[in-house]
Image (cartoon, rainbow, N blue to C red; front, side, top):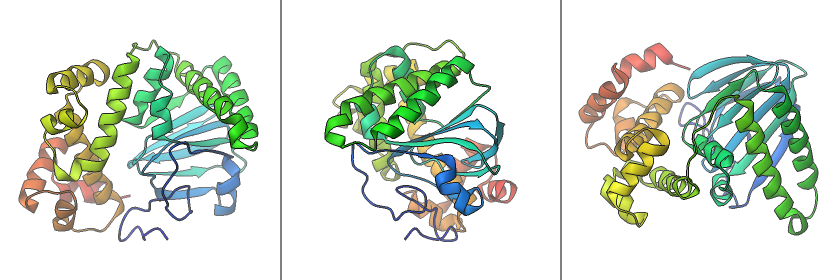
Length: 294
């Protein structure tokens, strides 16, 4: 069973379900009300290690908390939640929509067109899309409904259909943003996806950039160039960002003392952790916890 929020941030396979290893081709879709209605339309703060989720709401007001940032949404709106992001929701009764969960390993395999590649880069940061384009929403609703149907069929017969529907869903989500997207090469997306997966495994070991590059079989300069081109950040900044995000999550959602957080995140000592946190956030860890406590 997931640990209490007093001890750690709950981690689920799907919300409320005991954590287990998620298959690499895992895809799940359900109506918003399927899980939230029986919980008084509230989903408490939690996270998933290997799943990216799309919350697509087509009718109703809802509040999304993404790593402590609150978003009040209504009408056609979408939340894109990468693996590891702490999130919770409060839906108004009767809200209609879908929750789509996809293993990030499957997403990495599906990179292809420019629009899909751009959407796959959302694996790095959570996004909220409001006032979605009506035509794109109409298509998105259709694709999600078809995916729900297909997932009820024998997987051996429908896996290819499911993958194509996922690609169409990401294209519709991308178009709903109604903004010009920058093209990213498929090879860049695949490298970034592998880089993110390695960071998620080794960030508490504080690997240097050169070690990540070697594990990815590219030079450090190539990794720097791809990260700067696609995300506007250096590999070192992305590694530090992952550590800092985890520190903030533990300050927000647990009562773990600063010494414990520093040790959990692989810092040499608490003082070094506190200095690093203040450099990133512009305030001390203690002040951040008091000001932003969830």
